[in-house]
Image 1 (spheres, rainbow, N blue to C red):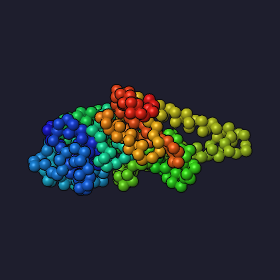
Image 2 (cartoon, rainbow, N blue to C red):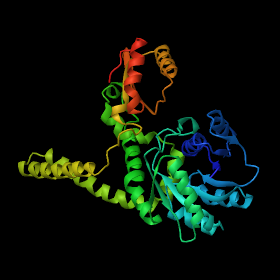
Image 3 (tube, rainbow, N blue to C red):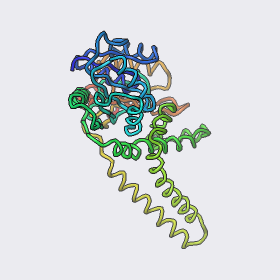
Image 4 (cartoon, one colour):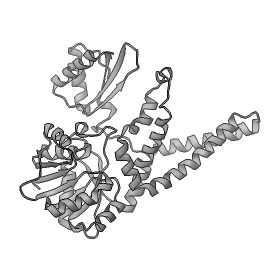
Length: 362
């Protein structure tokens, strides 16, 4: 594989393009937004516009509801020999593609299990997929050569391929991704009228719980709508548990000692189930973006000039920041920036920033 086209230069599409460019592939960038393409080009993700001849592989990186018409359009234009996508919903998008008359023999469904609450090309990174799972859902019609090329793409992005049936994939992501996003959004919506004094009490637990709620509402309306039934099934169980919690809390607040004991027992069982479920979530592996071993924390004065100086000093070290967290309380004189780099580079970054006068925490 020597040439790739990416249709859709948002977070995922631009990250795929950056990874392909880093491995020496010629990459072409297409998007209905000229601004998005321009931003991706500015990041050195590829060349703007269609290729002079069909590329080896096209990556359709558009929201799920747009996949079928975009795939059909690009196949009719002869953009590539083979095609894949990055949509987080597979069954309904494949059915829509079939109904639209797409050539499914030249298409392999794909879904990289990576992302961010941020969106757009400037949130992209060449190592976004490093060490992450990348689900592939080839159909009976998928040509073996198409599967081989998509496996090459997964490899050059540093991800791990996982083969799944489409329906199994959609049920799985409803549980591990789509429903949690909706729950985080519902919780965050309760914070909309939060008083400033209350906001000052917010800690890392609330930030962790609501982080994904910062995603694009338009994109997530598309994703959740395309996988609506599977997400609804998950939330039905969540709603049942939540009803039990409400009853338990009301019992605990009652005057009747027997009701209090019953409520405490029910609440304790639910919390224990939560611990057991959380234990099933895989921990981050070493060397992955976001690994705590690669975190360098820097207290920063609460004004723009200090932040600009810190970023200038980080830039001068030549190190790549793979994640950033801001711990900031309004009206306080200092905040903290948590910079995440490759764990092997963290001590070096800390040392270089210390030499520049920063009080670095590791």
